Image (cartoon, rainbow, N blue to C red; front, side, top):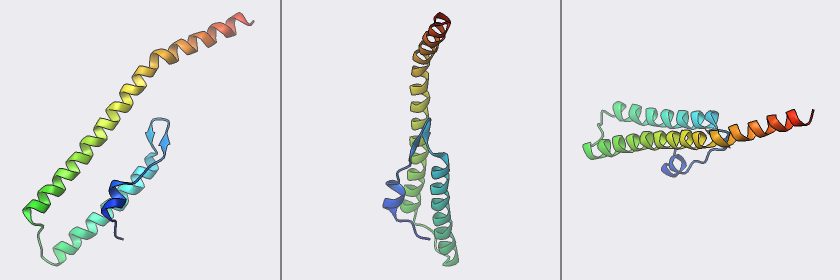
Length: 102
């Protein structure tokens, strides 16, 4: 299996209630892991090491993606936390309306 850079970087996932669909993300990450594993297998079979600048750039990209994911999770948590007061108020209003309609 060969993944092109654009396929990895520009992959879209469906939004679910609290972020991306975990099954789609996990499937895509699995494809990436398999592709990278194949690459490293081919390199080790050929007894070729990645040049230091390439290895460093790859490590930097992996780190950046991890940080990007953490930032997205923090953003989602912050967004959810900001919704709590509104949801509580809405629930109280519904409860009060239900009590008044009896």
